[in-house]
Length: 130
Image: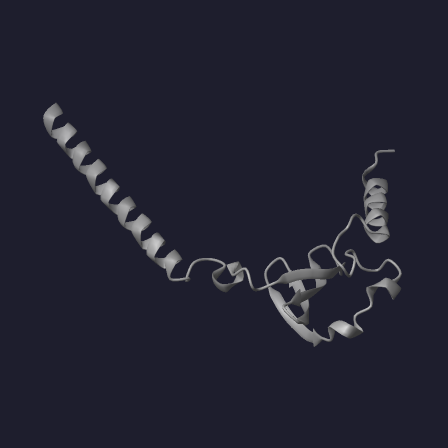
């Protein structure tokens, strides 16, 4: 094969690659404009989602209370999936009386809660070399 034929083949490869990448970019743009992209409806500014509290059940599992708009959801969270366990009434959720069981404050994280600090101290004790 001559050098000219090799260069022509390489140029053809680059043009084909540019066409494929251009089509992928255009398709992604169309999909994003129509709202089918990742996150879909979650990116709307009128939908408010807030994690109220989270409690670890083990290494890879936890229960989370999430406020979405005007309702609260109790979710089971693992590495592989998120499962809706129940609906909750926002007026009946009182995490101040939980005595350090939850890791987030009911009105949002203003700083580490006592349970968060206790968990960090426990982790430091477990990882410290003796």
